[in-house]
Image (tube, rainbow, N blue to C red; front, side):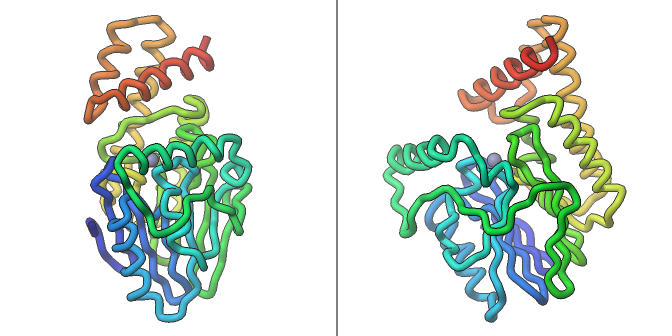
Length: 271
Ligand SMILES: [Zn+2]
């Protein structure tokens, strides 16, 4: 379902986990980001791309290698694929594919394309690395913390910032990698917000925003939550840790597991 459309950017949101997929159209290219989840949702994105493509080169960006973001990889077989070095060298590719397979089996989902871990054609290795195609400049920053293989992507001249699984309007930080790296990535977010003229921020889950105050609020929200969690875990304050768990939206077994993983990672890094 399209939830945002303006100046060459179309954001789709899945019914599952509010996961977003973006399609960006410039004079020089079409860029598809994390096409996902259900077959008819991926098909809607394919149809949109076919409709606007007009012979342009197609690029496919993965913000990170989590299974919900890579599930539509083979729906765009002629695209050049962009991802981080960490994703290219992902140590658990088969595990991610197994998650997709078990999801599809559990819900009898059939897809008209094969499921594979993406092969990356354009590998992003460092902060500030750019892809310049005609008038379009795409600048990348590594964003570890949630996962080791995250990427921030800024597209000029449109001013679109694709943040992956950071800076959601509702989803609190999930650490599958490192709390320290996550805080550094949030610092990098402030830098990006100050360095560039960001017209719109698109997170991996939730709503896009054009408001600078809202972008700042989201950085502060994540930073404040993580700092309070680190503090509570370091002091072994069980009550405060439980309170922080309850702040997560959509409480479920999934958020419970994410919270437990957050606590385990913080214990490992801060004691
Ligand atoms: Zn995600």
